[in-house]
Image (cartoon, rainbow, N blue to C red; front, side):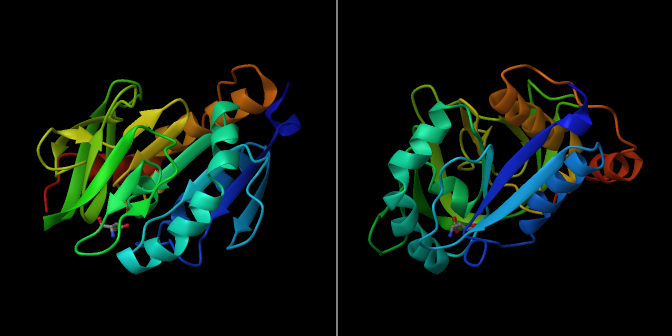
Length: 244
Ligand code: GLN
């Protein structure tokens, strides 16, 4: 099949509530990098009460504890539906607060625990220190190996079981500032603390996610055609090992 014969559906989960530090840029990047290749894309904004079933790729951004509280109960009410989508191979990308809700729970400071949807075996507790600054992550599955971004979180995330990190932090705190892990992955569910937004300056990761979503939808692997990523790569390279 030619790229122009392909299509993808993207669900942007609760953008009116979780969309911190330009996380919307991730949706724009995914959409553009498909359309620049002739792949048609539908992006649906999923708000409170909307149906979440049947998408190829799901994105959820970050937010302060207050917005997380508002989203958590709605997300939890869709836990079974989203677990079915995960097990069908749908791709998920969660940033910071959204990432935290992919785990079993997020325990804020002196507030009630927010139940997550357990798409990955992880949990988060609010720490005393806020981690703010540039981050460089080294992965073992991307080319180039690096991911760059910006973090701003007090949450400390711990991975368990079959959930593996996306990579190891070379600069910055990552999941918890101790074990050097960055982000989490289980099946095609990815979570990370990298805001910025993440995908515009990590085009190779955007393409990796698009290829996974196409494989889920069509049952075969597609290697996307190359784009002129000169500007994106210059930006990416300028941020490698840049510390705050
Ligand atoms: N409220 C969460 C924390 O501080 C998530 C913040 C965010 O999404 N940037 O850890």
